[in-house]
Image (tube, rainbow, N blue to C red; front, side, top):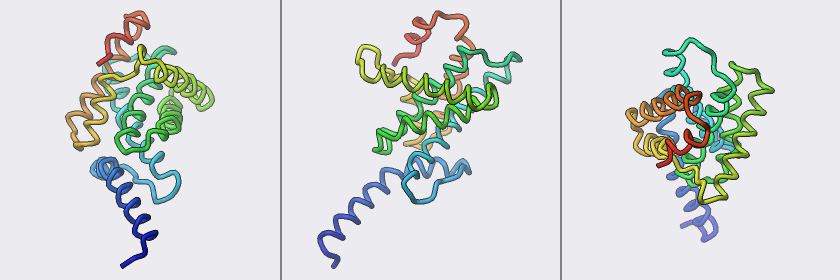
Length: 189
């Protein structure tokens, strides 16, 4: 029998492993890279899942629109990365990991459209807005995208991934048609 200290460490490791399992299985099924053990494992895995889901929405939008994404759409891509990474970080019991995952994921998503420096700036601006919304319950960023992303990973459900992508595509298509405030309210859960 292991000592009490070793048993506690193993128990904690088992609990952490069980919390990470849905995210890692989600990545594995889609042949996405699973980060090796280490301090950045959870963040790296969150980035991979976030980029996968948000990029699917951008690709759907791009297939039906020939125009490049405009500045407001860049902000919406970064906001979607925040929503997805926040919900997935909560799902795996690492709520503090969302911000770095959102920053890295949004920068990766926007880099091809606007370059790395502008992408990093847009990601930081979106993360700041999202953080402010988290602090104000009246402006809670709990959205349908967040809920669907969490369900998609928890259940490893491709239909929910498709739904997240469809919602993101709709946001990108309608962003120029709606005032920003009306747009934000349209997707509140």
